[in-house]
Amino acid sequence: MDKNLRYPLTTGKSRIAGTGAFAGKAIGAKCKLGNMGGEIITYREAQRRVKKQPGGVLFMVEFDHEPIALDASVNVNALRFINHSCDPNTYMRRAYRKVEFYTLRPIRKGEELTCDYGETHHEGTLPCKCGAKNCRKFI
Image (cartoon, rainbow, N blue to C red; front, side):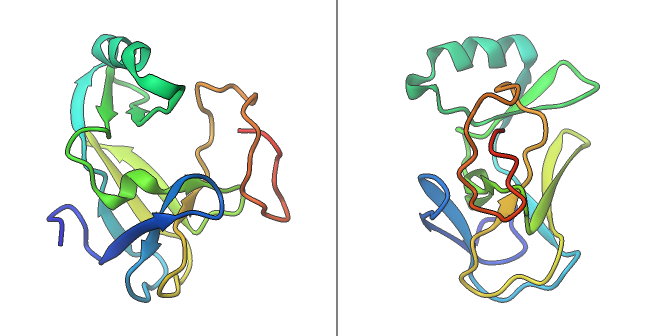
């Protein structure tokens, strides 16, 4: 198992979008899943890499109070594949140059892991496909 993960996770076809991350076993509420794999880079380098990325699919996480980002297309682990949901079962914490994921509630074995992305570079223009009853319709 990846040293950055505290629980076994798998990846596979998502009902939301593309590839998703799934619990390899039941996980309790308020548990740290682990740290997203990636490379810490400057914000300027992140912008340069995003422009070169094919298909417009982004795997960058920016930090609020530092001019840095985590490029999750490098040193990948399953946390990179957590899809957005308006009714998430995990949350993301950006701190100490790490991107950490925690469970919000108990997760069943095989359940897809989801996170509310919050504000994104899409600025509310990307259609949401989460299917949640409380879906905001856009990310």
